[in-house]
Length: 217
Image (tube, rainbow, N blue to C red; front, side):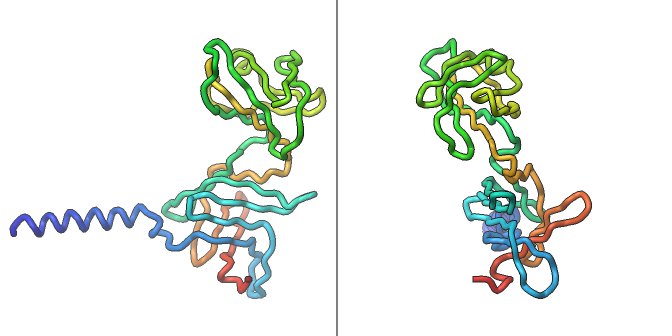
């Protein structure tokens, strides 16, 4: 019996610690929040943000030809949540996608964020490279590492965003983020309090109020 009580205390401490580091610290934070101007009139508008239970979110903002949407991941902090959209740079986003058939070269596939059609040619390091019908080319890691920007069909310019180390023997996808209005949230901590999310800004804070507290359906 003398070992039972200490053992139970240890178990309880683990349970309490698990609760402290889990999502129960912020309560039921998942849901949709609308930008809130303040006051008691219940007026809501874009932008809005929806937090999902799988730790992803969707952010929607107005704009010329919008609204514009972005997605990302969120996690809990002591004061609220930390958010970061999938893309944090307007330009050429390079993502590894697997292994290549040859060890002395790389496979590169191009796609537009806005889902445009087939590309004709890409200019890399002042050299024009023709793409096949799958928006694909085979080149070397050295060529892609040395380039700082991409020209698409001699018209659109995409600076290369920061990326992981590119090495031969791998496949890569280059996503051309061609939407200058793409809403970016880059590793920001938003404060959660009383059903509100506060996005800290340099001069002020933006407020977002949860949907269930606005009377909206």
